[in-house]
Length: 238
Image 1 (tube, rainbow, N blue to C red):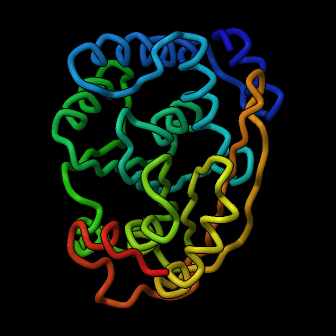
Image 2: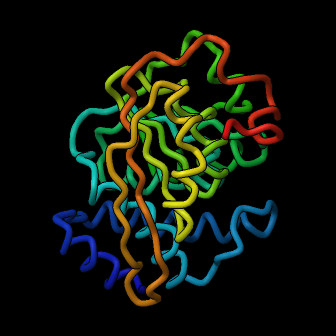
């Protein structure tokens, strides 16, 4: 998907990019490739692949949930800024908080935000488990997103404690989403969540399966969650 096809594909979903926003994506691509030589950010570096498998793929969350309003998003384990930075470019009014456990990636994100002239973005070097215990952030976000971080049984313990009551957790998944959702059902309920919808579709051009899982936060998360760093992954609630 070249940059022109990317713009057209978003247009078909009612997302129109200005020339400034197009330039932001161009700068994002160049910065990503440049920094990827110094620190490992992505295995995908060809322009057409980055536009399809990263930029377009990230924005698909907005096809199924209305992002065109003032919302505060927390992106857990965003790595190179996926999915929250592409969403922020498309919807500049979003407030974005990213938490990632690797300091080098936070360095990249700070540089990227300056290059893209982004405002209302904050980056924290922390483990999601510790971040979710922090009173300043716990249950304070309208949306918490995660893409390619962990399976649902683990992910719900990392993400749902950060979602405010009546907010949503949006998990971006591949072809295993239904199975993961089934295995993570207990964990989701325990964290105060309830599955709202699962939207499955194919990425254009390459036809690989993707799913957007939307989980509503119905109740407060019990204080004991998330458990200490490393435990959710080692002993998932199933």
